[in-house]
Length: 215
Image 1 (cartoon, one colour):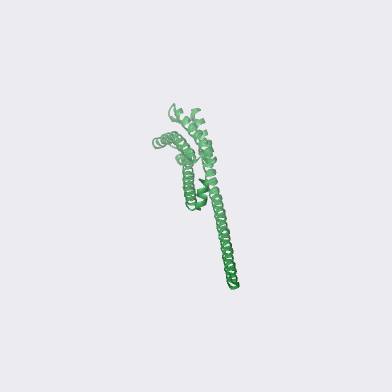
Image 2 (cartoon, rainbow, N blue to C red):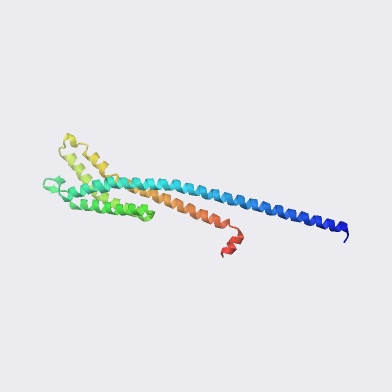
């Protein structure tokens, strides 16, 4: 082999090595860029989860407040008054005791359902709030209906003209617990669907080598 051919071959070898080095450098840059992009996405997802978590906690606190106002305090007062036979619906006739039992049982079920919401069991929590608030409101509606009939057919003192409205403010906020529980359930379902879609997209876009390796 002549000296000229040797120089030519050496030059081609150097060019090939330079191309290979350039290619490796480009691949490293792309890998770093991809890694940085994935890191940024993770940070954004964490920030979003934190933002959603704040709203979920706020809803739980509002649900608890509505329960404490209507279910625990006024529900307890209603049950005590009914069981103590201090609420008359006619002469020598008091409110039936089942109204108190409905208020107590419904409030107890909603209380358990709120605890389930705090441990992120949103489906069970919603079912519990739905059942508990339905039982609670069954007793309350009977009491309210009886009160309305009495106010329409009997004399009501001027200072008691707003009694029906006042009782609504006391007992009907219990329905807010159902609304807040429903919103928490919807948020939970949306988060689950988005997570499953993201996981599926990551699997579909994963490199062939990683898929083979996982198998």
